[in-house]
Image (cartoon, rainbow, N blue to C red):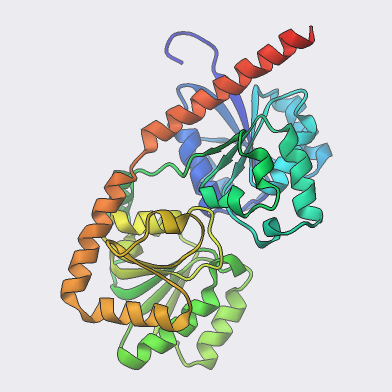
Length: 362
């Protein structure tokens, strides 16, 4: 802080060493509050280490997300606040909530949340100990079977989004080829990349020379590659793998397709909109709050996806209208500065409440 006060020490905890939506958000948050907070990123080893090093963010590696590992990091870092990202990190970190206030940050919806099972019960117990729960959309707690119990301590925060930053990064992108359709996300079950291939196959019936690109890596990579080969899509779909800066590609595509099975927020959609790209997406999670007919469409099922994409690509007038709508929607969602200020305010709030609790106990 500029007034000479000691910075808050925040320990961000994540259960992955990869780099995707949640990790991207955490890095933006850390970079945005450097003046007010001293942040440490705790996670497993992986791709994230190189990115953190480039951003000058302190990283402490753990072997696994266990109570022992987190206790060891708490003793080493001595944080004022623990910011636990997603469910597993929240469950483990809440074991230490008596010593350090813990904020749960839920970046996604998962199918297991909807029913009573071991995972949903375990998270229920940990959520009772959390000082606050942040959700990226209202759908997170609405879909959680025990969500009604935690509405008072839940804040819907969305995600930090800086449209001008996305445009700057797009200019730095090295990929100069063009494409009609883009898939940008982890090659995993939630993002539904195999449905994307089916959509491309159906669109190809109306637009034989359609060109598509897939950005991302993940456990379904080999399944995707095998299906591309079996369906003879090698000359239609180009796989670019993981990209630290995918915005050069995004800038040179025409439409973003997000056939997700579930989404907490759907940040890639907003990023594409900032570059004037219409978004055709599933009607799930946070996507339902900002994707509509003005900037794209929400779809259910392969046929509807293919139909909406085909009409968009074949009609210059419709495309131009939705492109302008996408740009306008992204500007309305620009909130980077306000978001960081709100998070720092929340840190101070939970510390103040913890002080009150301590005073009452004494």
